Amino acid sequence: MIIGSHVHFTSDEQLVKSVEEAISYGANTFMFYTGAPQNTIRKNINNDLTKKAIQMMKENNIEIDNVVCHAPYIVNLATNDADKHNFSINFIKNEINRCEELKITKLVLHPGSAVHITKEEGLNNIINGLNRILKPNSNVILLLETMAGKGNECGSTLEEMKYIYDNIKCKESMGFCLDTCHLNDSGIDISKFDEYLNLFDELISIDKIGCIHINDSKNALLSHKDRHENIGCGTIGFENLINVVYNSKLKNVPKILETPYVGKNDNDKERLFPPYKYEIEMIKNKEYNPNLLNDIRNFYNKC
Image (cartoon, rainbow, N blue to C red; front, top):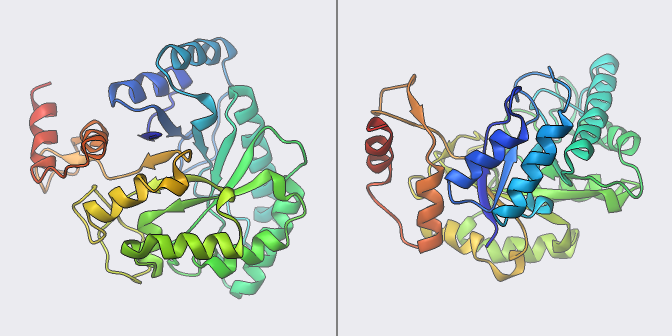
């Protein structure tokens, strides 16, 4: 099983910080942003830190090809604004270059939102952008993430993803990232995940799934809200998520947790703790811990 979580990438320690954090969670992969996900400010990659991080990965059985980078949320290939569209294209090209510097081979991207235009126009803008970004023989595969359908988000149905994929010229440099919370909120019943996989294989190809975000959801099926919940604490449920993680068709696909940090009490929004060590342990044991949140709070409150 290839499992990890979102981790930090700091300006002073960069990928070394990411690897150290992943190891502390008992993970054998991880996902990171090369800067804050809410903005496009980026600092130069330090090659010495990258070499040190790669050596640490080798020593701790983390395959670098299973490590995932995520592009920031605010780039939007679906926009009709020419300046914003061009900025998004150039920024994603730069993120691909940064991934190459870091020796990372997977970059996850939200397709974008069709603001003040039709969904069809938004999808065509995404296709135009991807056809300007993707190059043959690239060392980095761009993975479009399945979305919840909030607002006018593109990529919330398999049909939309197929439309994008069918119109991409450089298909070898593109794949997909499934997100269980997004799937649930878009209307996919995770208890019938195999049916979804079969349809994905029929319309696109299961081999194109390069990453899965494992998240429970705070929301009902088809809510179009995109609010993640801790593993087993939401509407999807522990057993359904375990069936996704251990699905034999996806054995070699990295699974990444993006679940919420936990406050020292239910009302605390300031002191927040990462849940990943405990959630990864639960998933490895295939046994839900009903005291998960309290155990996390007790552990970190003692630190």
